[in-house]
Length: 401
Image (cartoon, rainbow, N blue to C red; front, side):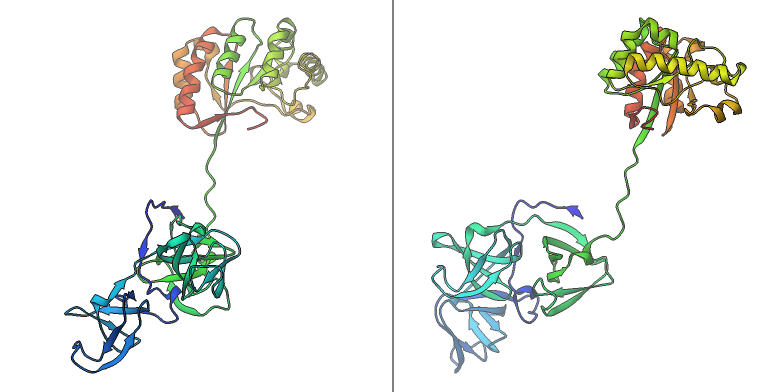
């Protein structure tokens, strides 16, 4: 439903089906007599009266010509000067255990119990904190303090046919049917029922009948994994870490074992700041040229170094140069992680080119290859992060991707 907050109450006339046992004409208004007046068969006070309306009596009437009102229930006319129109506003009963009283005092007759969060029509406030209301077709009084302005939303009927009832219960009379796609204002929803109204209808329908059955589309979260190879570098990696922290971005560092030993404090910092640490061999040898036993020994040696420094054993590895054999894929338990976007930063050593390549080739789920051993890469990183953020990307580690 689209939210429509209203700053003033939506004024209504009391001829709505929710407050009457039968439908009233569209131009029928609720009136209250200011003094006793007679009802005539014709708009002529000189003729014989056919009935009367007592002072304070409330009745529905239709405007007629020459200062007269037509009263359907009396099948006659009354002079408009003796009657006052009662314009009402929808309110929500925002409390439990509320009663509709006949008069503005709790010592008067109790007319009905009131369901919390249901709707009434308030006509005017009276002395000592009471309001004249119409509730489920009955007139009476409720404490003004329990009546709240509704927060109105807009919807339509999604069911083939919505049954309109005068009370929020299955046992209540069905006063009308609302066809699919009819637009409605919703004033309150509770216990599976909603009070709705428009220029034609007002009453309670099942909330399910005005709820879009189509599940809302899940927002697409664009993710991208930035990865850095060949570090940690004593000068460049700290700059990369500082920039990632500034932009609240996470990355994955595929580190070389011997560099990890040389720069253990930097590696420990990267891990402590939430970045993932991957295995990139011990000395950056081309593993695909080694025996499988030698490859496994190299990776295990590197894993041990990383675990000793960070306290966590790597779960992924990246073979140097991306060189990998089928035997490596079968024999090594860690999954190999390559890349889908190569910045070629190792080749051109140009910050502008690194930024341009990433901006043009970034895709949801991409794994970006960079190297935290080249100063131009560190120089490019702030612009890379800003550009990707502008495109709606979230920066994640390999495991999160």
